[in-house]
Length: 110
Length: 112
Image (cartoon, each protein chain N blue to C red):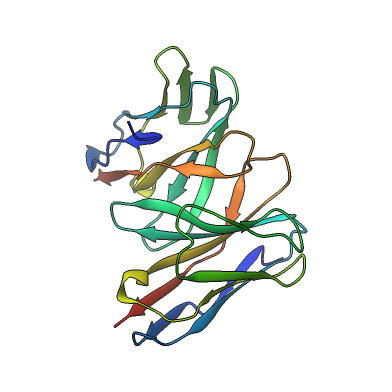
């Protein structure tokens, strides 16, 4: 099993739709999780951090299911500007290093 | 306040040539990282430096060397470039004990 696994997509949704991505992780001891957003040919940028059961920021909600070892990212009322690749990221123990998933690509269409 | 800067933005090398990728930060973070990103492979850690004067290998260090010149700068050197090193290279920074990392704009390297 990969340490961090994501469905690469692409997810093609119309504007205004709600879309959710899942990410599974293998290390049950992981305590913190991150979602990064990466626009085409740009650097990854931190979108959300998840330290407990979940986090919400406007239209974006991240939820953590420790029993099943997955994290989800929910985007409500999708905008064209949400089109990007979303990277699920898990720290590698206490090393300060991060493990990146391959990313899930979202295309929001008018 | 530029955050993390990388030079050059683009580079084309012939097999066997050498080059150094430069990374500099103005955020006073201790940790610095070099990643490569390839299609379908995600971001993979090449080397990292937890503080000035220390460096350590990541997942894919072969063919690379690094130098942490001071707290601000962390360079990545390819001594003898190979086509397999064609990739996008990102430098990132982070604070000790904090897992969020901040990335530079990347260097797109092609080795022919």
